[in-house]
Length: 127
Image (cartoon, rainbow, N blue to C red; front, side, top):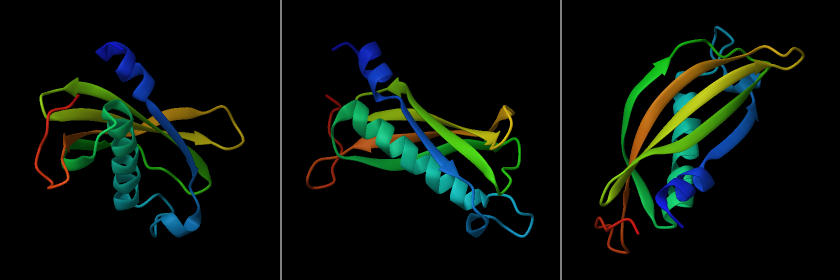
């Protein structure tokens, strides 16, 4: 399978409902919770691409463009944007949509870098 097919096949989409226990005093999703969900989505995407042990080594420029209110649905969309020798980058976008209308917009986006590791936690080539 070529790299374009692997990228396409590893794209990951996760949906979550935003409940009050995940929101702050403004009744919007905690930024840290959004980042945790993004890292999880990126990890799944990286693992599906490489089928190797992967660890997060950095997150780049996470942009919080819109607040994510309680009582909405979020879609986390992850896809590989770059493949190096031992590392790869995954872009994750969070879209917020209202539960009872068709309104949907991008709320958060960021990029995460992962490294493939062996059983000794040393970097290895991405196959």
